[in-house]
Image 1 (cartoon, helix red, strand yellow):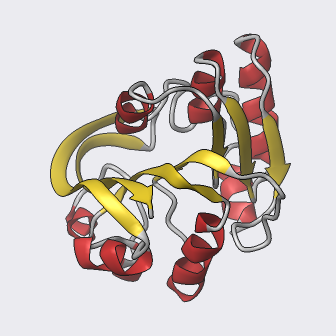
Image 2: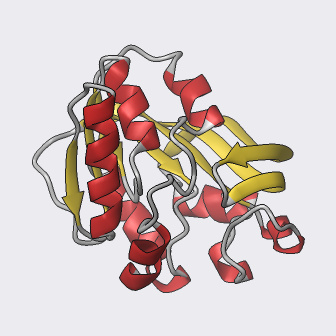
Length: 197
């Protein structure tokens, strides 16, 4: 899997563009800046945007190339982010975060639920998760995402995997994606904003 992402991020261009995910930006902008955790952050577009808004950003990804691109983007934008190369299950910290952002983080089904629970422990009580991922109905679309239905999301799966949250928004909808070369066109997504109880 590391090889797949290192290859995708090897080019000069940013695979998913340099602008933040639209839903992430819209929801983050409603919150007072604090500490933010971005798992599987890839080339850093959400991290760099958040840092520019005054957030203290910790990000990680399995891809070494992703980190290189993210730090380059941060430098271009004159912001500072902390970025580790590590998997979701291995990530550890003594810090507690005000927000966790999960934008199109599609983990293998055999580790997904445990990884989500593992990450939730780093969110403060009263902290917020901003989540957007491809829905099961994305399989027929060409706008990105895994080609394996098990790695896509349903509302029910989200409710089960994030049981300790009070959902402020939880929806499945069709949107138009325009994020670099790999997220382009009509897409079926599941999104939520949840507060940790």
